[in-house]
Image (cartoon, one colour):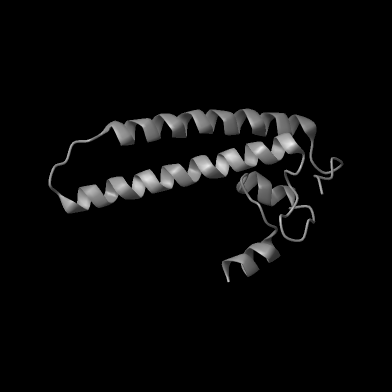
Amino acid sequence: MSVDHRTVDQGWLADLRASLAEDFATQTARLRELTELNADTGDPSEAHNRAALLMATRRNIEQITGALSRISDGTYGACKKCHQNIPAERLEILPHAQFCVSCQAKHNG
């Protein structure tokens, strides 16, 4: 099921696509910097922090890519579980949201 185009403004969707593409470029550059940083200082906490940053950056890229894919295939804004429209307010705050609030709560268990 696709987004109800009566509730999602196409200009907003185009702006969102541009913003997500910009975020993707930023996160990709960050990932490149983090993976190129091979300075092992011998400090385990620094290695742990770097690993956490790498994981978070990869997760961000995955979420951005997913949102861009859903925009392209026309499913952006539809809950992946119940197929109802995700409220625009939720998408504005969490543009990579895949589930409505109710299904997200069930998904988180």
